[in-house]
Image 1 (tube, rainbow, N blue to C red):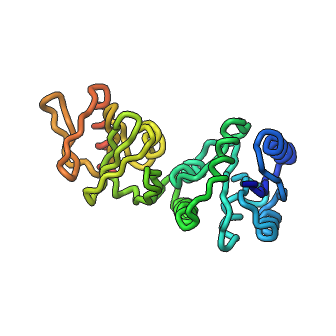
Image 2 (image 1 turned 180 degrees about the vertical axis):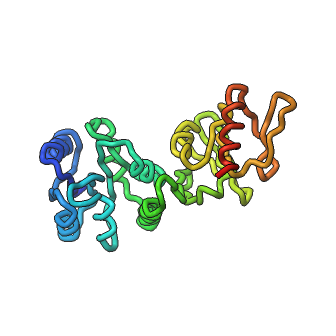
Length: 253
């Protein structure tokens, strides 16, 4: 299946570099349009109806998200590009959407193209984009919803509904307030980085907890935490002091 692609990038060098990488190293992809501003991107995409859009997040005339906001009935995949691993990229990760950091790694580019080549459930994809736009509207650095990729598809979860996350080998199990559990094929470290600014803390190699859902801390038996659902969570000796400090600060806010 040949993919028709549009590149939205305001720097000529980056635009041409990505075009050359795609044409030389990615099979069955045709660059049908180039754009360097929000206005030009909206017009080009609406006119050409590509299969995939490589969308720079930071444009001189606005952002890639402005482009998404102004398009109706999105029927293409979006692969975001950026030179900065920043708040916007965290929002993209929360939505389980693809992104590429500049300078673009060839293997990551090829992987992103192949994922775009596989037909997605368009309704689910629209939900991912909606989740992204919702999170971007919130006051930084708060992110309200997270998209979890499971073996069955995607789950869209309110962050404040997560009690804690538990490492299950190379997988992560999410334990939610409604007693549901979700198993995701990503390492706990991935979610530690994503949820750090959402009042989550890695208190043990196996546990990442929502600090707002802590019921009590028990000092005996080496110390452990009781969550609001009465589950017991282990805490590492090296984490106890930081945990107490963070909880004290959280209570004062």
